[in-house]
Image (cartoon, rainbow, N blue to C red; front, top):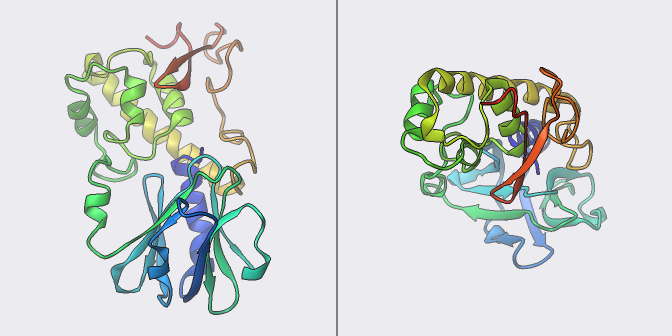
Length: 263
């Protein structure tokens, strides 16, 4: 599933291709793929940005399209709206004949239309962006206070920090030396500080990697160009101590860690 670095890479590649384009028609593969998107017809695209793992296509009059890529989605531009690949699930034709397309083999991605003023309510439960000034050690400490759930699950729910997914949560916990099973509320202030630094540092490296190499889901294995220490390395030696990397299931997702280095 695309995480924050991959979604940011999609945004930066899409932005110069669609800014200024006017939408003249739209379509979708089935009713659940897109909602209200016919309201975008006739509007010009003013910009593209991101909130967590959500892509926001800014339209005239303050309206916007929210796109979530889910597991296999990619938002791209095709040169001729009539020549869409068979895996395109929703599309927006431009006045020059091109189209912005949600290409999604598993058809899990979603596109929804929203009017001005809906953004705050839409994202009210999301935590701050990891590279923003709002994401501080104190913020992370306050969010973790009294939380009994495992710290890996805590990081994945998007309320402490947004955009952090399975790969980079595991890598940040390894970098900080924290056992993913430990209750978030029982982590010391000093270790919270290390975790905060690890989250920001891991995501910066991952973003640099994604901007260089990410094309689409499946274009490379997620994290392949990022130097993973534990993710996907069950049974392999830990790069720090040589002990075997372990795998457990938390919240229905695989968690990889070193029980020797992470306490």
